[in-house]
Amino acid sequence: MHYKSQSVTIGGFDNIKALTLGGDSPVVIQTMWKDRLSFSDVQDAVQRIEGLARMGCGLLRCAVPDLAAAEVLGRLAQMVSMPLAADIHFDHKIALRCMDFPIAKIRINPGNIGGREKVRAVLDRAAEKNIPIRIGVNAGSLPQDLRSRAGDTAEALVAAAERELAIFDEWGFTNVLVSMKASGIADTIKANRILAGKTNVPLHIGVTEAGPLVAGVARSSAALVPLLVEGIGDTLRVSLSDSMENEVIAAREIVGAAAEIAMAETATRLRQNGVRVISCPRCGRYGFDTHGFCGRWLSRLYALDKRISVAIMGCEVNGPEEARHADVGITGTGNKVLIFRHGTVVRTVPAAEADAAFAEELERT
Image (cartoon, rainbow, N blue to C red; front, top):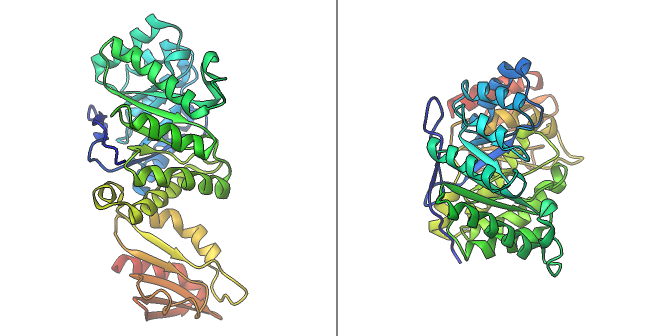
C-alpha cells in the first residue's frame, strides 16, 4: 500500500510561515517544547526556536495547561516565523484563547475537552480562523469502553480516532489531522496502516514515550521507517527523554533512512536537504576524539543549509580512504589533525586548531 493523504495548510498568516502537510508535500519534522512556558524565558525561547528551524524542524508543539501558558505562547507566536501548535486537554477555553493569537495548529482530544458543545465552540472558532486541528489519540488515555477491546490496542486506537472524526464530520469540519500513538511498535504500525486504509486524513506519526536517546531512537526507527516507506505519515515526532535538538536529528535520520529504501515517488517526499554526517564509533586505535567533536559540532552541522556529506573519523585506518565519498572530513593522529576532501588530505593542523580549521574548510565546501 502507498498512502496519499489530502493536504492541510498550517500557518500562512501574520508572521507565520505557511506549511503544507499531506499530499505530495515533504514530510514535516516536529518536536515539542520541553519546559513550562514563562514570560521570563521568551527571548531565550525565540533564539532556540530559530536554531531548531535551522536544523530542519518545521513545527513546534507546546503544552498549554492553563490560560497563563496560553498568554505566553501567544506572545511567542508573534515573535517567531515557525508555526507553533498548542497542545490542550480538559479546558476548551484554553483552545479558544490560543486562537486569539497567531497559533498555527491546535491539538485536542475531543473526548476530554468537555462535551459536544464545547467541542463545537472550538471547531467554530478554528473554522473562522482557518486553523487546523489535530485529533490526538493516545493508548494511555483511550475512552473507557475501548480500553478492553479484545486486548487489541491498535484496533482501539483506530476506533477512537474514527469516533472523533465522526464528530468533526457532523459539523462539517475537514481541516483536520490525526495521530494515534502507542508505546508499542507493532501497535503503532498496525493502527496507522488500518486508518490509512479507511481515510485520507493527514497523519502525524510517532511512538509515544519512546524512551531515552538510544532506546527511543531504536524503537522509533523500527516503527516509523516501515510506515514512511509505505507513504504513511505526513509529519512525525521522535519522542525522546532527551533534548529537542536530538529529537530533530533523530527524526531527520529516520526520514532519510526511509528515503533510501522507499519507491521513487515516496522517496521524493522523504528526502531531506542538509548535511549527512558519517562518523566512526571510535576504538582503542583512535587518534582523534570523534565523540567530543560530534558533541561540539552536531547541532551546527545539522543547521547548515548545504547538501553535503561530512565524515568524522577516529584514525588513519578509518580516515580519508574509508570516507572517500565525503565532501569534507576530519581525522587525526598524535597531535596532528587532518582535514580531507573526497579522500585527499587538504590540510594538516595542530589538534588545538582543529575546530577553527574545520570551520574554515566547511565554509569553503
